[in-house]
Image 1 (cartoon, rainbow, N blue to C red):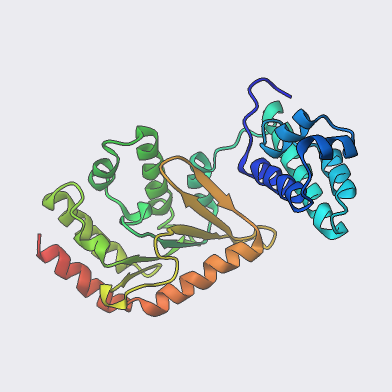
Image 2: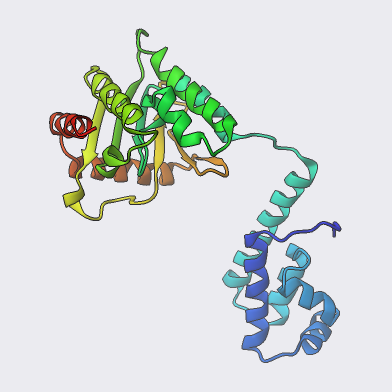
Amino acid sequence: MPKDFRATALERAIGRQLAGWRAERELSLAEAGQRVGFSGAKLSMMENAVQPSAPVDVMALGYVYKVPTPEWQAVVLRAQYAEQVRTRALNNAVNFDPAADFANLVFEATLLRVFTTDLVPAVFQLPGYTNAVMQTDDPVRTARFAMVREAWSTRLGDKDPLAVEVVFPEAVLWQVVGGPRVMKAQLLHLMEVSEHPTVSVQVVPRSVGAYPAMGSPFTLLGFPHRQHNDVAYLETFIRGEYVEEPGLTEQCAQRFTSLRELALGTGESLELIAEAAAEL
């Protein structure tokens, strides 16, 4: 076990499962350890995720505790996965940052579906708006937002331009980011880009109340090649993440469709944006 071992959430969940098995059989650490051939100390460390739980050890515990086969097999699979993830991390086999790569995918995509919850989508942000958002944040993210904006603008003249569909709640229009002047310029820019034939901007009115994916912004990218599946991109101020499993990206697509159905049409959305701009 490495000296700097830090258990992942998955490893901690495995430990709780092992402890639960033992508790169900009302065995002490010493009794359980004696049955399986472990020391009580080792078993305690496994249950508390102070050390990794090797798949073979999980298998042995499942057998000794007479856990139903499908149940212990499922935990063994989790332990195997946790072991693989840890080995990759220790070997530094993967060094890939989705947040840094995202602009590259935008360059390659043919369809961008964006749902934001508190900001104008990055693809349509003006530099002043971005700077105001990021002034107390990481400047590297500011540069990445600029790259995303550039990725869209440089595609406008393409034979196969990038189509962009965005949906966001009405509250985004009234959050005066960067002060009235910056926000007004941003709203006027949003009105301008919304009239482009490859752009759709829709606003979810506050009268709707709760709506799908509330509080969970995401971007869904579609690509021209059959071999390239849709990719969902999620980002917090900590990191970005790609979600590529077809079942999960389909969930994003379904929620986006539901959001568009709840939102105002593009014409009504444009009127609402104009109204917010006029208030500044």
